[in-house]
Length: 228
Image (cartoon, rainbow, N blue to C red; front, side):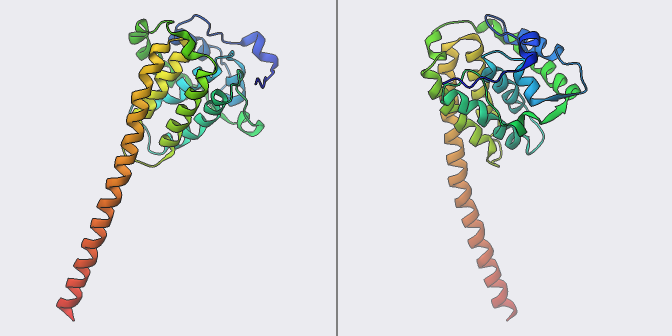
């Protein structure tokens, strides 16, 4: 089920990922922009059919380090589109016209990519094509569902819940880009751990909130009895 997104600049300025290291792809992507601001549509048009993996990598890498509060919610929302694309088997990433028109500063984008590229170069020698059938349809449908769950976890305002789903999505993105099925499998326990963390945080958060509520109520009752 392909939904192509034709663009005049895609063929001329496309960034191809086939058989290339992730750091090399990101570096070429960074160097391909010259204007002060970059539109989401232009970013997507410069990527080939593995736009899902590259975009997920760009969105997930900042989640793996301490960042500005609230940014995980924004990036989590942006992850929904490539997650749905994987879930429904779209080779080309489709985005609404309004979203494609969104822009962001080139300098900040390239600076973030530069940090990511440095980290990737230290570990990407471990990533290589293997168990490649796990990175193709219909298995990628399950990958899309897992990514969607991680995006929803990132959207939730839960303390300390950014890094585990961010790491899981980074693993999935690199696996898609490099056709590394083993790396894809390694993302599963991290994703499960993220969901368990959210469950435990919510469960015990509610218990603590209830205990504090009861304590405050008892304290107010004691004060009322003392003064009246």
